[in-house]
Image (tube, rainbow, N blue to C red):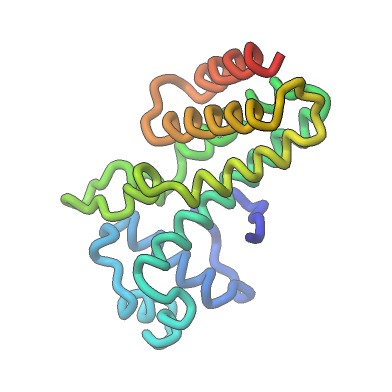
Amino acid sequence: MTTLLDVSQPRLETPHATTRERVLDAAVRLTSEVGWSQVTMARLADEVGVSRQTVYNEMGTKAGLAEAMILRELDRFLAVVTVAFDAHDDDLVGAVRAAARAVLEHAQDNRLLHAVVSATHGADTELLPLLTTHAQSLLTVAKAVIAERLAPYDVPLSPERLDAVIDMVVRVVLSHVMQPSASPADTADDISWIAARVLR
């Protein structure tokens, strides 16, 4: 998976964007404007200026399109995690705090996330399971990236315990992405306080 360092929302389309990227951009825009139920391969083809067969060739099924949209957004979230860890390469708890805050701040302005979570277009909740009950691929990718980022730190935990910590942190952050209960800064402080008690 290619990590996208441009984490702004929405992405600006450029002449150099691939057909797949243009289809995903159009799908996100339509989902946020009219709802996922109104997104069709034919409509995407019209938006992008390609044939419907080209859209199918790029995305496969509509379910494949949905997963690609979610995983691309995850890529953007993980890009801010990478930046946070790079800025705190000698302070693991500080890295956890910065990463959690960056993710939660990024979530505030994410068009696709808002469209999925709020389901403002009637009962259009088909995408929601990809972030909740069927989020295994999302969790797997996120946990793998966090594990890789933790590797350089001296953490006095067995691999099994460390995996449990990573799973806990990822799930807690995802929960607050879906349903914030405080400001990103306050939530990040709470998450890092818990992480500090476990990691130290």
